[in-house]
Length: 195
Image (cartoon, rainbow, N blue to C red; front, side, top):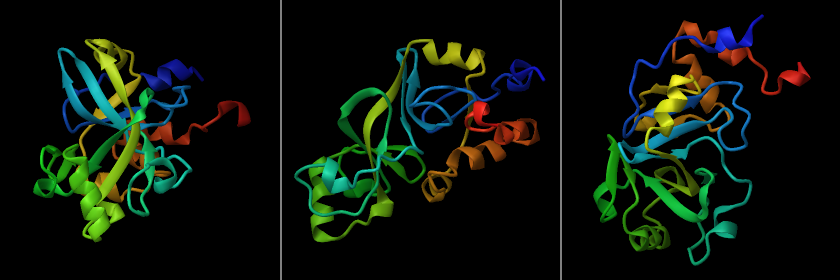
C-alpha cells in the first residue's frame, strides 16, 4: 500500500482564514503539530497565526500562571513560538475590553486584568476561558506551501463544537467530519511502527 497516495486525497477546497481550522495529516511527525487541530486567529499576506486546540499541558493552571486567583482551568500548548507567553481565547465578549471576535461567540485576547478580576469575583467559569502557552505561526506563503503539500486540511467550525469537543478526541472527530474520503486517516495508528 502506497501511503503517499493515501495521503493525497484532494487539494484543499477551503482557503485558510480567520476562524478556520487546520487539521494535520495523520503522519505529521512533530511534537507540536502531529494530529493537531489549530484555530487560525489570523491569515493574510504577512503570514498566519493560530493556536493548537487539542494539546493541554499536564500542569494545573495556577502552577503555570502566576499572580492569578485559584482557577480550575486547562492550559494548552498553543504552539512552538514564544512558549513563555500566554494567549487567551474566551466566550466573554464585551465583558473583556479589547477582545476580538474570531468566530461567532469566540474571542481572542483583550484586557487580562478584566479576566483576572472576573476569576476573583467568581463570575467566569473554566468553560468560558482557555489559556495557551505559545502560538503557531507561519511566514508569508509558508502555510499555503504546506497546504499544497497536503500537510493540512482546512475546515470550518462553530464555537460550541470547538469548545465542547474533548481535546483527546478532537483530531479524530474533526477528521470524521471531513467526509468519507478522509475515513482512512482515523484508521492509521498514531505510531505506525507499533502496528
